[in-house]
Image (cartoon, rainbow, N blue to C red; front, side):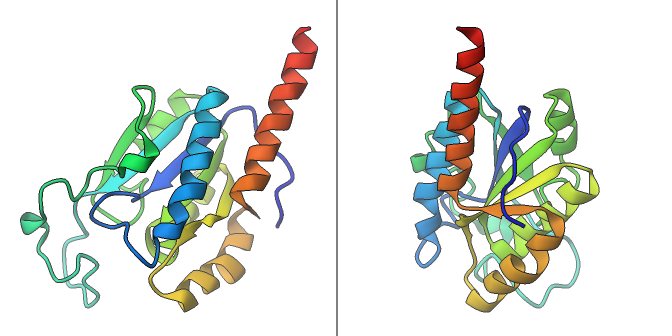
Length: 194
């Protein structure tokens, strides 16, 4: 479903754009994610940066940490990428599962901030982004998925999430479309003040 509106209490949630994960061929998501973060900050809307420092316990056939144990990850692996220019007003949520809501304070933070809508970006589309999107939907948030600001190492999984899963969970739009909505909302509120 295409973007129809942005709530005045929207938040940007950025999934796993961290130094140990972002590399080719998924690095193309960085510029649109950075543009969204700048736009949300300019409009005094919350920016939540999510990083991952662990994984679910138990058996897992697909090792998402590149064959490394979570205990042997290099220093700085979980640091948010420099391009996002983390600001003092940004919120950091550290997760140990795919889903940014699971065993974190994300839902409490968003509720305390009065957030009703989430714009979701990041990597990997079929993993951290999709599981967080499903949970956001289950928690009752209006959801917008910025399609050009997410990527997956598996193109088929990425496409499946975009075409089959996300339309059932919320609205989809490009980062430019979302920023245009934000800018129109700002112009509209300034016109009411004058």
